[in-house]
Image (cartoon, rainbow, N blue to C red):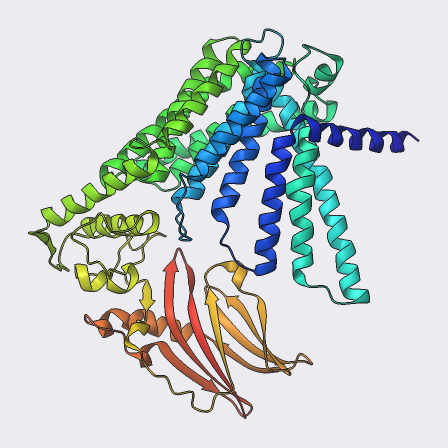
Length: 585
């Protein structure tokens, strides 16, 4: 009976969340429908609507918090609904209408979603002498953990049931699994999360007190496990800094993520343990914000040094912005009482909004910085004369790295239309060496993991090369761009399968019959090594020789020919595109 009562209370809470956040549920329903269409059609052409619906859902949540904190009339609630709906519509028109995919827009959407979520937590605590920011952080944290637990268990259970049906009764389309996960994580998980958010409109009620209470399990976890781990991590971090502090240390790619992750951990743990009255918690609150200030200072210096060498990128813009926020948080936590913790929320929201508002947003500032750096580097090396680029393979290695990184950044985050001296049909990976006179270079040292001179191979199919099939029975196109795209099976006719796996950083292509008997194994190492070694020599301003990127192996049963039309090597990992011709004898 007790279990049944809890289940009944849970379902009632979810039903209440539907009436409390109706617009949020409507936007989420739209998201789930768009997801279902994309799953069914196996395409991704609704990003504009998905971004809009996600912004609408968070705006509706924030609007409800504003209403509960500052207003009481039903008419005022509908005014908030109208305002958030209008803002959502306006956001829709800021997105590109064409179906082209640009990284700027998902990043911008994620930043706005983050700012809205912080607002959702902060608004109930504004000018509230009863509810403090760190208390609401605890309530939201508990709601999120419960949601992950319940939705995760439900997802595993549904997946197991569908898997049993698929295995024991009849085959299910793989999209059935995706549809089920879409419903669970888009609709159920969010509705359950909202059902756990307390109603703040009635002051400090019993419900609110329960929401702010720290469960004994979490108190022990934070006090006796998390705090000691952070302390040990602090010692290790400081030893690393002291033992390795030298000129190269400040530009080490490992430094920034280490220091940023440390600051994030300290801020989150500080806000959580502020709800705990324990000696360890008090020590943490007094000591670690001051340590964090020192760490953030290191991080800011490292970021500024990198900007001097390689300009501003969107990522580095956000790193510096986070540094500003972390300094503010460290000062607040170190020298102000706990009831002032909520001041970090408007600072974080303001910085997030600034980062997406032209012309001082991360993307505009980074684009202008990289364009200036590229033009200055080309001009200093006499490679840009009267608006025309002159190839020069003999410029300093440091300038090659600058040119490579600037061009690649502009190509990844923006188009080249605003770079007037680049050709209209410029393709970075196929035209870079022809245009600048040297291959793409990523590092000043060959021992650096980012070092990758001559680390790509690209065959220009624009020359309409005819490739003889030579009696091949099957042609398989393999796009291998990340680790998840290996260890997969591709059917080759009715009786055979082609298995792709990684052997070190190279690929093994294995042909097996249905009984599991191996017909042939093709190791691509020789082909890839040959392609990388000969690419620079063979191109000479034109297309690579097809023979350089082709290899044939055969035995008494099978003949395999592989063409490596594109290869990229980055940090000891190779990706690319292979064409595999298979002939059965």
